[in-house]
Length: 271
Image (cartoon, rainbow, N blue to C red; front, side):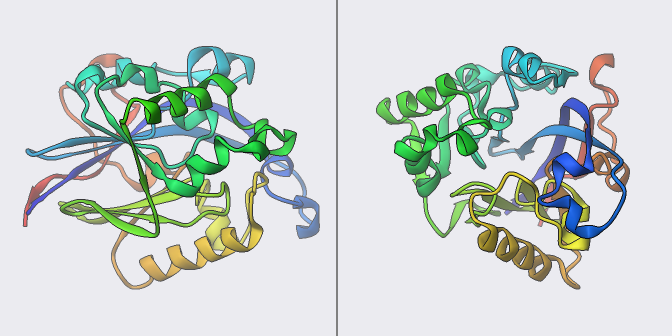
């Protein structure tokens, strides 16, 4: 089996506050402070396939929410030698605005999502304010259109997406949040996406403030601990500015505008 190169692409950023980031932060009895927050999508590729995991926020929703777009995800892909229009598979870890904002740039792709995630966001409770504030109505409608086109693959439990790539539904942050395990040339990579926004969530057992099911969020933390304990697996958080420090792999030959935005988590290789 050919192992995968795994890249984290930092396309956006903001500076948040801990009190607005962690659920009920006041119970920890700590002073508030700034918390840098990065926005990523991920590329998983080898000689056989290229898979894009999430696709970032769109320019208008990002601007409206005062997020800084460092590079448009579609332009970043082109800088990596990937034509979005030719991508055959996009994994949607969940349907929040900063993960599905550019699906229209992938007209030929099969879009993979958890069944219960799709059913929730196309169901009646998605419009309730505490859920809806993290989504864009037109982006959710696009998901439904993709389903109508026969391009949406809905998965349940744990599924082998392709040789060396496993998806697991963990829920918590959203009803059907996905994590991905990928066989990389430097070891197994766990793309936690928003099952783990920040490493501190796992290290200090601190849930993020956007939560659909708190018990499932804690269970997701426990699963990630089990996956990484004494395993040598490479755990990639979904929004942590430390990703660039923890994984210092550089990709040579990129356009100047991508030079410090792309981090190689794992090299490709042959097993």
